[in-house]
Image (tube, rainbow, N blue to C red; front, side, top):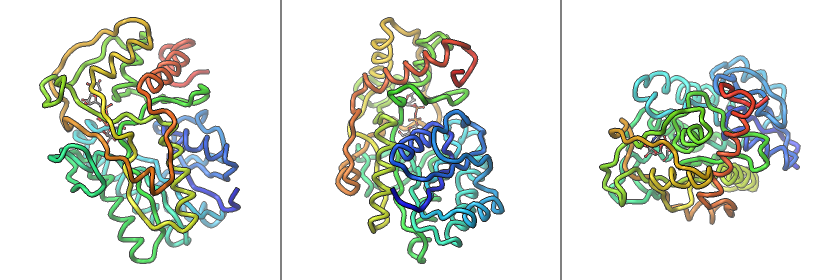
Length: 336
Ligand code: UD1
């Protein structure tokens, strides 16, 4: 255990809460800053929860003054691609401007390291197929742009003597804590696996396939689905790497192979033991046809080994959580 604390913004959210759980298991001391706009108090299984905003400078100054924080893990963000297309300034305020406020406060209080939750959406549509960290970044939606701007702030601040950082570019995160204690409870979900599991348990009528005319093997979108437990363990590996003096870097977080929308829906139906109600719809705005990682560097740089690289395991854990949510109250987002 390190005697310094970790500030986790967005630690009551889907990915942040899985990281907090693993940090707790590793005996790290954690302060969670979350405004609970999409997160849940009950998702915080370890550490001290402070309800507030990453854009609140006074609160940040207080937290950094009161606690010896050496690392910030920054998850707090809006994450819905179509919403970012409809309301870009919402994304630039929360994901970019609030990140600037956070980095400014962290830097002034001599925080040493930042682990940043970035996204594969920074790549946009790739002409060269799979995404390596060397590919040009050309986001095609404000969500991706809002995150890329934070990557740039981290880079420039580090050059100017600020914290060292690891920016993790997430591909498609899915699955839940296999013990069933925490899971994905985002209201009004748009993510494919979550939506399909809601259909499987009967809390949603149907799942749409957005676009069947993409230049992909079965005409539907291809994505690299990574289990949230593996993604969370990559954050702990990034923490160890930075604390042992690793240089700032940006890493893809995926498994390096993709599944189509139809393959994901088939896996959910398999896990559920019966077919889902599926309809076909036009392409969704802001969606690239294919986003799959070249994911070698995260393994070698962070010495990270995934444990759940299996679509059936991923969707089964999501489905188990969805069943747990819907068992008592179909309109609830978190089980009692
Ligand atoms: C997700 C991430 C984004 C990341 C990207 C990486 C979130 C909110 N988004 O976006 O940050 O950059 O992965 O690849 O975490 N689809 C359907 N029907 C549905 C929902 C989705 O057909 O009801 C299709 C989409 O068109 C897409 C695929 O399923 O082809 C995945 O979509 P989704 O789960 O929404 O994630 P992304 O948009 O890829």
